[in-house]
Amino acid sequence: MGRIGILSVMISFALSVGLGPVVIPFLRKLKVGQTVREDGPRTHLKKTGTPTMGGLLILVSVAVTSLLYLKDFPAMTPVLFLTFGFGLIGFLDDYIKVVLHRSMGLKAWQKFGGQFLVTGIFAYYLVRYTEVSLALPIPFWKGHCLDLGVWNLAALFFIVLGTANGANFTDGLDGLAASVTVIIAVFFSVMAIGTGSGIAPVTCAVTGALMGFLLFNVHPASVFMGDTGSLALGGFVAASAYVLEMPLYIGIVGLIYLAEVISVILQVTYFKCSGGKRLLKMAPLHHHFELCGWSETRIVALFAMLTALMCLLAMLG
Image (cartoon, rainbow, N blue to C red; front, side):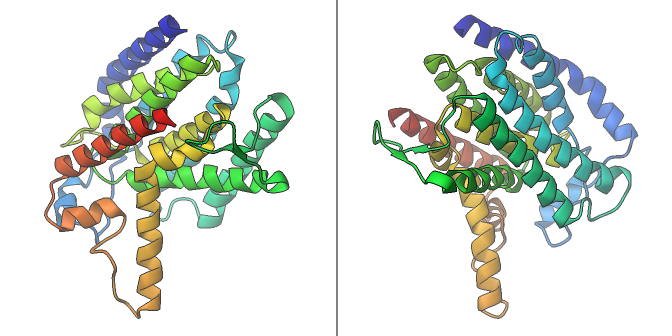
């Protein structure tokens, strides 16, 4: 299993690196440039026009690598489904915004409805075709689970949708979402190999693909992953956690995702309740640090280090 994992990382990394010089100029030719929000940090205005939808690099690399092992490792199926299902929703949203030049992309109900449908199929597959339990093992309390009975399904929807959108909120600085998620992918790869769960080829493929993507995505980024990549990565994290039967660990290893989501919720709630006052200088959280004078590279380094520490903590659990 360890040998297969190493090969998966290397193959996916090579594909991602090799596709970059081909896909990025193609995206630039299509003029699928990022539109920077006018109310965002002023330093981001120079990023206008940078190609987006770079998540295609990640998805293609993961797909090709995983297909090499799918026959022998069918346990990867639900992870691949949720990853590419959410990736497709993100792709459609990006395509409408940057190719068809409709600023809103998918309507909110369409985006949420698509996520809800994909999550429902994922849940059905787990219950019908796998032995994965939807009960929630409690971190640091060996042998104990939080079994909500019929509400386990509701918890799954909450965790999956929350994780996917948390990853989406995290994608706001050069290399941020990729740096945080590659560390989480390494954590899941270690867990997958150690438990023999059968999903190591895909977790390792995501690790390799993100390592390659970061060559083009670190500051100053030559391509952004867009919703195509960020939603797919959120789906990957949620699916991997469920197949490994450790969904509550997302709250530990995905602390940054959680913080980004909570910062948006608190900002919006406080704004409405206080009559227009702001709790943070800007949400999501990484923009608050930017407006406090932190550089993008410093914020990315901090968030990545925190994720690494939380992954080590999760291993103790």
